[in-house]
Amino acid sequence: MTVPLRASSAPVSLESLREQIERAERRRADTAVIPVSAPLVPLFFDGGLKPGATYAIDSSISVMLSLMAEPSTAGSWCAAVGFDSLSAEAAEGFGVALERFVMVPHPGDRWLAVVAALAEVIPVIAIRPPSRPHDADVARLSARLRERGGVLLVLGEWPGSEATLSLSEASWRGIGNGYGALQSRAVTISARGRRFPAARRTRVLLPGPAGAVVPFIPAAAPAHVADDVAATDRRAHLTVVA
Image (cartoon, rainbow, N blue to C red):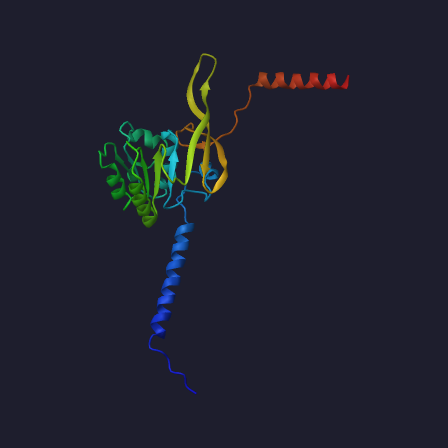
């Protein structure tokens, strides 16, 4: 017996195949991340900046610039909106590639429209909001970021952030007892997010000796300090034995 084929069988199969391909492409896009400098990788649940996400940064422009350094050197364009006192030299000092860096220091009252327009073509955008946006505006901008796979870095609070980054335990290197010059700053950067209950932390030099963020390596103690510690250990050992 011959079973007649329905005329709609082929189109339905092709449509199903197309949907499967689109789902696979979306999954690949979801798993991709925008890279960050190696010392900052431990802060992020995905190992980098999640496309379509917003990250709030607690008042540290140095952290913001450090997050843009790796994407810009890897070939992605970055933008800074609303930072009227930020210089190109400062951005370059933290490792940002100026040939792929756009600055809009005075976006005006329509700063959200400026950010939304930039999000069409620039994957990493840092902003310093002059005022708290309305929830509807945040939702529209978030949808634009998800559609384009961009990332928003906000200096200050932002509703619905993927994570909030903060800086603490800062100490400068290079200054002795009345002499020397500042060479680098050791800091602890913490990240708290919706997808990880405990804070993630990393200790880095920011700025490092050359400006860009580098891993923190404890400075070796001076020789006389090491000798004093060793002598103290020996005395403690003799006391216990006695």
